[in-house]
Length: 146
Image (tube, rainbow, N blue to C red; front, side, top):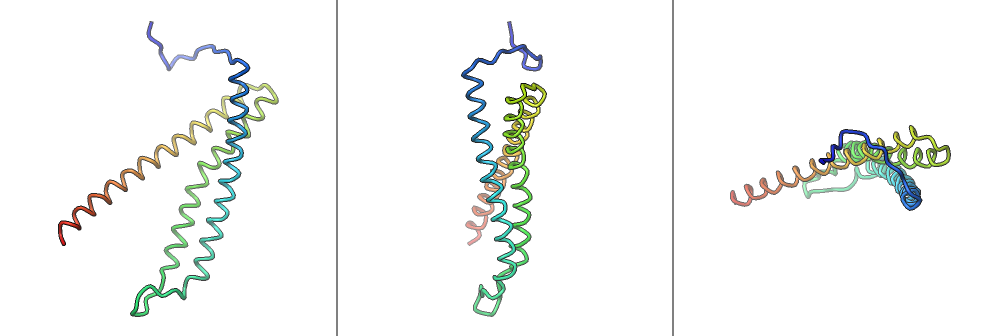
């Protein structure tokens, strides 16, 4: 008989799986808190670049560091970094609450946040690989010109 993954199945969770989920929830909460701290540091760094990098010369003819561009880039990256961190935090929080209350709808919602976390990371991994591939081919093309 073929297993159809689209059909819900009644499953029982043993004590080991329950303990493993508790451990995963603790680590996810820890990583989410570290993620929020890193997010705050990214925002602080972006503002520090905005206020302090204006005097850094980048060329002999008097050009200066493009601080506005770096500021916007870091804020954009901070906004992008917020979403997987938030998904991970909500997963850990709802998982903890579901184990305390025994509420299966909270557990299901926590798993949905975990799914959102992995979808977000997966999409940005694909985008990052595509950018690297494009940069590789641009590098090859530029190398053949010179």
